[in-house]
Image (cartoon, rainbow, N blue to C red; front, side, top):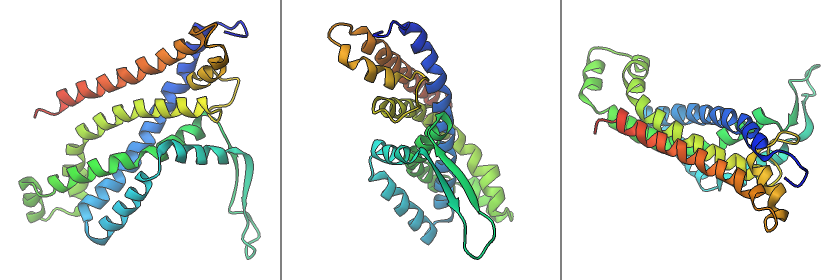
Length: 235
């Protein structure tokens, strides 16, 4: 690149940031999406209304904009919660931007997309005959959720989680391109594109190589998600 560093080595090393972090973001988003969608669809009523309005409110905000806002807060500042009536701090935390904090942010941003799909699946499943029979035999709500509904949701959750991994990689690359991703000296694909942009005319490989890594990785996860959907969904 412009500093004489090996592009292939930096792209390969960038996978150590993008792939593990994307999996962490996927797990965070999947956990939140499954819990909220399952509770909203199973219990219904006002709880369903409140949870879905909150989810739709989050869906109206662009994911990249929300991630930028959260990442901008991770500037190393300290948070002190010290109620005047108590002699100790409830919380002392440093808001520091790193791989773990960044992909937790991405996970918290991506969860609303899963909620609507999970809720629709739960609404369909809870009207099935085996749920009615289990309820007639005296099964509790806890048993219905963990023994009957949740196992039937797993194929949908797995497919959505794999596809969300590709979206998490794209979001991380966008944050890295904007300069608010994982800080240097860790190489990330988005930051490598940003660093090579001034040299695109004379040395286009500085931008093309990490760009191809992003495209191929996201394409691979999307194809994997489609393949899993065909395998796990007999219909």
